[in-house]
Length: 220
Image 1 (cartoon, rainbow, N blue to C red):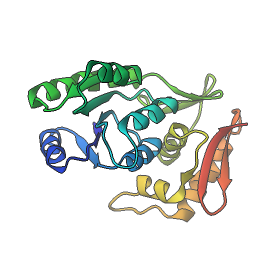
Image 2: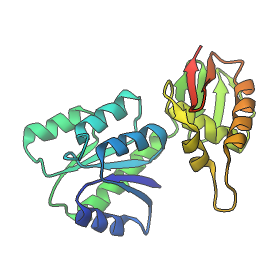
Image 3: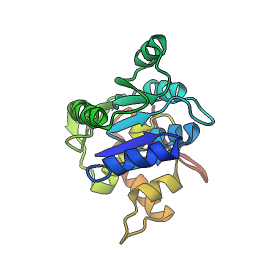
Image 4: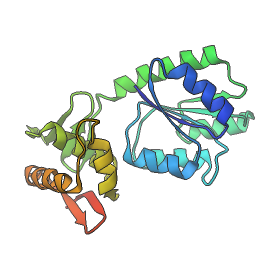
């Protein structure tokens, strides 16, 4: 399970990562703007989010996440413990609100509960026009027609549809698709994108190339 920990306290972050990493893949970010970028371009099963962050407040990170249509479970982890602040956080789209100082046993239990909830949500397809992508089954459809996509094409489509109507740069695609034994180049991305574009022609969605920058998946 991939977890994004957004916390600017290095001591607390290290303690939480030490607790979670034996069981999960944890990405740590201490900057609000960088966290927002990661969430717009990457997929996580759980987000643990501090409110008081440099450059962008955690509440704005959460607002933007929900505005993009993401239903990824979010646990707010913060020193802001007033009732009205907890209510505001939950109303903004958080799934749980845990005030500092953190009880690690409670945190572990809550992580397990939110991950179970996230797994049930993974079966809900992501839609753009009449194109859908199911994260659980790793299948893409145009209405009721299943698309015959390669593993690479499915990986690219997932990244694009999670960032629908937003630019996804080529560097990010190369980074996400590369493996230790195989580095994906810009030219390879161009080939995959050409094939994917042809296969989704039957939909009301297209992949627009932004010259020198990247690609945007958008409705026609």
